[in-house]
Length: 399
Image (cartoon, rainbow, N blue to C red; front, side):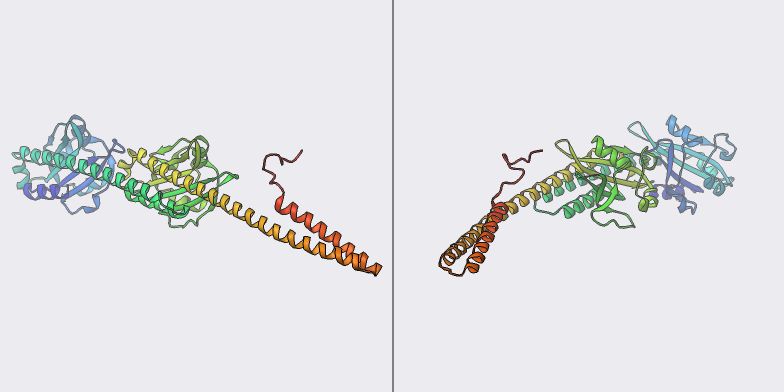
């Protein structure tokens, strides 16, 4: 679009050639995509309401040619445009239409009384040709971008799935999820929040990418607001104006950074109906990825599902490791217990023999006391190493 505007301004002698596109995230808004001729590069990216001559041309898909632009009652440009174009006379607003869709408009203006203005009256068809080619280029670029973005999503999801099938720890797995999601979606902030089954008032922040204020692993956060709503309902929240979503209540230390978020998504990380956590993705207002990302909530949910499977797998592995450790500890305990009992039994036999051979009454009493102490020690060892666990069948405690 930069090439289109610059070349058109140079060939036609126009004061300015401007490409204004419809914001698909907000169809009532136009975005200045390119400016040629006049030195107003800072106009690029400026957003303005869809109104005036541009709105008429875009809505009707009809070219508008105005001999005295400032005198036309429909002339209602943004304030920045009006100041820079006080000397303009003739103007054209040519809609950019591709496959029946109005993508925006090409605006061309000439300085009042200039030779270029007089020549432009016979060049309407040439300007229209520029607009037609510009619309075709826009459509082709958008299709290419959509395909490239789709391929990026598929590639990232495939890489993530393969990685999470290997042995990775929780923090590394969640860090990988957030990085791959940022690469595929262009999200500015990505975070993973884990529910704690043993704590109904708090959650744990595992990773947050894109924040200036770093979040340490397992940072405890109150279980409240939108995060709590997703954990409780298992339903995703997708909002174009995240900071105005009912229940929005970010941690105080991140409130200023979250204030810039426009599109925000909270996706449940669930397995078999159990919500293990929440995956957050946020895009700053006017991010170049915001419009496309709004249509990709399903892909973001896929990442949340993969993260949930990784968490479930890691948790299952931890449980298995704990079970193996307990079994090994029980085996060692039994072996140690057997050895100790054998030694205590041998010591007891020696004491019985010494007791029978002893002639001193006091010595006999001392030996008998020691034998009772050994018997008590043997009973305690049996209770510690060989009693049933309270959770084993047949060993429930009576109330």
